[in-house]
Length: 131
Image (cartoon, rainbow, N blue to C red; front, side, top):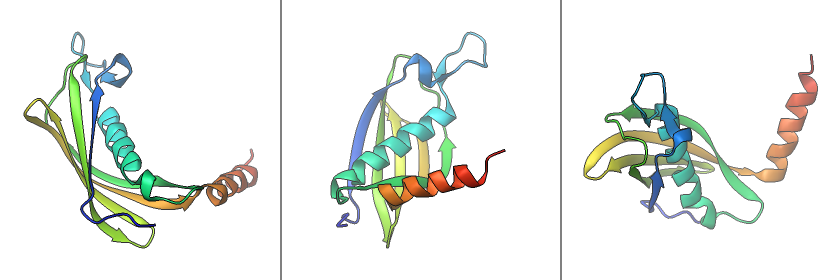
């Protein structure tokens, strides 16, 4: 695993219907859970090329500030920066933008996992917790 410190990655997304909140009548804007999803996706994609075959990463923590709305149909830019690496733990700072407006800021933590071992762990947890 050779993830560079301060690695910067950017991805652009369109705020589609499945990413908006609909609990405010007549207003369709990017929901906070969807912003979390986009940050996680950008961070995962950022480090995946640096991981060996059979490895991926899972999100374990996020602290987010959702600062401004983004209307449905608009584009959002998500930028992640690798700010800390400690063994299998990778911490990112993230910012998201709509045009020049800061939409959100976050600290996001991921752990590098062996996919086969993780799959076995999930199977074991399911089998031990059958009702």
